[in-house]
Length: 488
Image: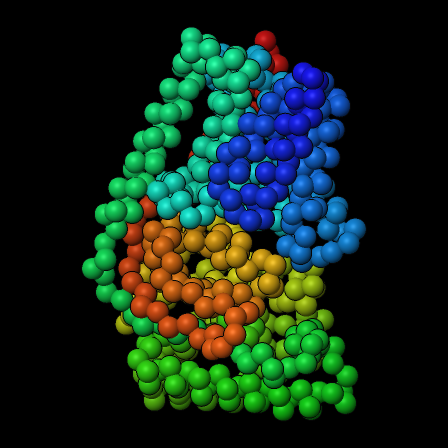
């Protein structure tokens, strides 16, 4: 019977882990990790490590189906690599936890997990996808920790709970044996939750606001596959003129919709990522029309555009063009971080500098979709003292909730309110504390326009200035611990 316990823990932990990642069940992750850790520490080293990796891989394959931009064998390979980075902290824990004191042994696992998660975000194209910090979306007091340490502090706290609980479990919950690690964790976690709750409770509601509208192209204008053929410049010549006619209809629709929202009181109208496609030869005339509209209606237009250059190796310019109420072009920004795969193969890259532009409405920063999955990139908005971040995105149905939730943490980290205009997803706005101000689902029936009052102005955060220092300290902590254990 005793031999079945680690197997049951392994299976239950893997199921809860995958469910928490896919369905954002906060409590499930707090239960999953101590179960997995108990299985890892109890099973034989070789078979235990292999079993753990297989369990995590199976969980990811089953629960994250449809999340990756690729399918089939490529998706399995990516999941296998991600599962390997998740299994690595368990290996480090097996080697180091028995070679350190009681309190330090409880810190080895969270240090190793944060280090692996952070380095995966920096060294691979996965960015911060599958960070367990995102599973805590909805717990606003806990989410405020991101303002201090980024998402890495949340990851550390969750995993530290797992190692502390497993330590208590392994010692039969004997008070004398577990008092120090348990009381230390309880004090730290309690202080974090209390401080986070106070931060949210004291959040100012008396801030200047701007009315913002987000538009979304009509869903019945294009046939399946036409948008893709236009963006990648693969439409045959005979089809090009017909598609150009549809694009002209699309252009008129966006300009008319923007005029309508401006006359309804919106001062900023945002279009989703590449929601407006245009052939390069037609762009100058269209931009001139947009400039006249912005000047006539005294409105800011943040246009998510995809400019297609016929016959080029990289035909797509994925960009955001911001026109101010005088009709001037305040920003023309090219996306710098393409999604690996299809987009990477057709898109021209920007210079990697996130623009922050002074306007009459405040300092406006701009980024595009996948770029907001890189906290260090979005941190440029805070370093540039931005008062508002505009984020056009383009998603698919399977990731709409997860991606939306991830971007709430960018608002908390930087202290910058965020407007998110989504194609095939959730258009929304967050205040600097990660609270949702409004939401519109492009997959719902009816009008997909979002109108919302967005507070303008940044709230200072420690993370904006220290960046990923906490994560780097975790990396350094693992290296020092391993060197020390090796010397001993």
